[in-house]
Image (cartoon, rainbow, N blue to C red):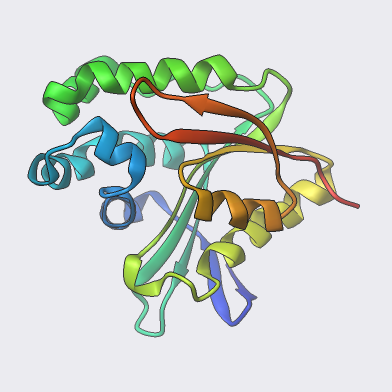
Length: 203
């Protein structure tokens, strides 16, 4: 099923798209502020990004809700990975081993990141936006907003709040425009801030 939003196609993503989703998320996020903090070496960061993000993509496809947008050629250019934390979801399978293999010398920092995010994560039932990724060549065209609007419409109808962490001020401002409010600022050791943000459902 497809949904026309802002002249973009937003669709549910099947498990068959896992490799394409992983490639897109890695392409969009391998050089972000948190990624640079995890892995200062750009070559190692680029090499390891797909294996790292694959952990979360596979988990979202199995336990979450994944939406994608496609460009005029049919190539996926944006993806949103949501987890419905209105009930218990198991952690990613074999997480510690896979993180160690994917992060290599950055493994300790991944665990620091995980601990910092867990400490601020709300306990109230909500949907969690783990990743919103738009291919760099397609940014600033409304792709991210279309993906947000698609799921927010569902949450608003159901009366369910949403939560996320913004990893830079530009993303924070995008989420503010979509009804999120900053709950706290997460400080990483010698690293960039992350903004913990909450959105109440709208009438």
